[in-house]
Every structure is written in structure tokens, then in C-alpha cells.
Length: 497
Ligand code: PLP
Image (cartoon, rainbow, N blue to C red; front, side):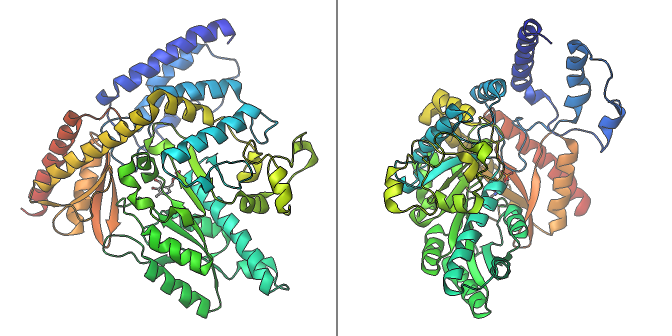
């Protein structure tokens, strides 16, 4: 394909995408396909000769779309949202054209500097303390990671490094591996599985602190678990507090937990993957109380802020811990300004003052992969195009529609909402044994008109209903509720004849 054809095909693709998104409501949200469906439609080997674009383009509707789960559909209520928007898509388009690989400032200065600036914008938008922002002479700052899972892992690895270093002060002969084997991480029993995965990768123990009746991890329960481990000779080192759990969007008691972590010298990470976007609305920042004592926090603009996947915003208060944990600097990655950009781990205070930290950095020291995509562009386009007010309106509208759905469920005495609704997630169930709700969920999903996933909260089987699309209207919610009630009628008649 040459540039001339690209201009034509590109415009066709833009039209196809706009039509797809604007007419998405008409598509079945969950595909009616069985595993392996695509193997019958696509040859087992690659074509020897190049194919024409119309042939390739024609296959999108023929073979791809029939197997797509339409995440942008107003009837998609599973998981948490993974929203996109037109300015975000334009940001990706440009990023794909530039296709720079931003590992150091020198590998593409605009890639690094725009990321620092938009991460400062976003940090201020959600009300983070200054210590988390890129500032001259400061060691805090924001970075765009691929996922919330990766941010959790990075935080755990940085905390692990800090803990091993500290332990060695009093046990200078201890080997790193020996200390590693004693380290314990903590999270609530509602934390996302990515926290467990981070502990598995880090080869550290993990304890799940039981949540209270509001599905919140509380400070005294955490402290008790830490004390018990210390008595047994373990070394508690890291805590993950969740703001907006996957099951019910519940919130850990950050203020209490932060105090425990400060007293016990534990690294505190906040996983706000979904709920973090809501903090751009001041009324939701109550859950951030205690944030000034947190070490790292991450949330996904790729979930609710219409900046499409991948884009996880992560901030740390002390980036030196990341540098220490991840610092490798082969000669082929060094550049004229290497070492000026951030205070070297062993540098003294005066060197720190002379550094250009706060102006530019080498992001390869802040992440697991060496390379990074120019993801800041899409975030920059979205924030500028919607403005803070436009984004706040979008979040508040999602919450309003969830409240409307909640009221519909509450109006039907056959249903219950066993956990308080927070933000855009409503969890509901049919009153009675779990099997009734499980059957309802399976039946709803098999019809393909709406798509939901279940969760188990303190032994109760629930269906999660998340408002996911900026295209969702009141009419869509009314239609969804009608569908749920119709299926519930059948299920109840069958199971309770
Ligand atoms: N943490 C929470 C609370 C989540 O709900 C999720 C996913 O929904 C994750 C972490 C994992 O997110 P990611 O796919 O960005 O790793």
C-alpha cells in the first residue's frame, strides 16, 4: 500500500469506525460463537502473495465482528468499562504514525516530556498532593504504565527493594534471597487477583485481611495481621489498599491503613483501577483521605476516562525507589543528559539540587520493559478536548444512570442489592439460594442482549451491573431492566414452580 492508497483506505476505515460505534447498539453485545470458530474461517497458513485491501477489509465484517464482544455497547455491563473516544483514537493514530520508542528522554524528548506534563495535569485533576508530581528537585512523579496489574507489581518490587535494604541495616550478613523469603505483603480479601499475581512473581508471602461488613479493609485488622507475622519472624513490607474493588466497588479505609503503614514502615500502594477516574469530581475524594501518606497509587484512565486501552496512570512519591529496583544503564542507552535528569540513587542532597529532575527523566527506570509507546498523546488529546468539566460530566452521568438502575432493582421485591452501590456499579441478586441468581446470570448472558459477570460477596452470589458506555441512555437502562425482569420471571417459574 502506498501513501496514495493509504489516504483513501484510511478515510474508509475512519468512516467504518464511526459507523461501527454510532450503530453499535444494534449489534448483539456478546458473540454467539463457540471456541475455535475462527479456525474455520481463516486459512491455517499465511498468504504467499499479498492480498488486495478490499479483500482484507471485507473480512472485518465477515470473520472478525461476529466474534467480537462489543465493549463499547451501552448493553455491556460486565467487568469495568474500557472506554474510548474519538480524540483518544486520534491520539493513537498519531502515536502509531510516529511510533517512537520512548525509553530515555533522548529516544524521543516529546514522548517523555508530554507524559510528565499530562501526568502532572491528571495528578492535579484527581487532587493528589504535590509530592506525587514532577517538580524540580523533587523525587515524585507520574508515569503511564500498561496496566494496573503492572503498576501493582512495580510498586511491590520497589517496596521489596526498600525493605531488603532496610533489613540489611540491622542484619548486614543476610542474603537478599533469605530476606525475600521472609517478606509479607497484605491486601484485603476483596483485592483484585493481580495483587496475588504480583506476590507470586515477587516470591513473597501474601496475607488477605478479612473485610468488614462494608467490604472494607480496616486499619486495626491489618495491624493485627502484621503483628502476628512479626511474632512469627516474618518481615511485613508492603500493603495494597483498594479504592473501588472489582466485586462491589467497595473502598478500603485508606486513612486508617495509611497510619498503620507509616507506623510500621510498610510501603503503601493504592489500586484505584476503576474508581480513580471518579476522583476528578471533588465529591468523590472523601475516599482519598490519607493519600498524603501513600507511597504509590495507580488508576486506569483506560477504564472510565475514555482514554482507550492501554493507559494506566501511576504516581510515586519517591521515584528513587523505582530507580534502585530497576536501574540498569548500559552504554548504548546513555545520552548527553544521562544522570542529569534524576538524582542518582547514591547522590547527596547537593547533587539532587543540581539535577534537572522535574524537567525530564528517563522513563526506562520507572517501568519493567525498556520501551514505551507514545501513550501520553491520547491522554493529552482527551483532557484537552473534553476539558475537566466535560470529563466530570461524563463520570457523573455514569453514576446517575447506575443510580437509576439501582432504583429499578429496589422497586422489585424479588431482588436485593446486598452491597451498597458505589459509583457506576450495582450488584444485585434474586432473593434466595445462590443457584437462582447463578441461573439468572447464565440465562441473561446466553441471550446476548446484555452482558454481565458475577461475583461472590461474603458467600452471596451476585450479578454485577456496571454502566460502561458514554452512549448509554436512560432508554438503554430501561430496556436492560426489562430484559432482566423477563428472564427472572422464567427462572423463578422454573425453579420455584
Ligand atoms: N485492580 C482492580 C481493582 C481491577 O478492578 C482490575 C480490573 O478490572 C485490575 C486491578 C486489573 O486491571 P488491569 O487489567 O489494568 O491490570
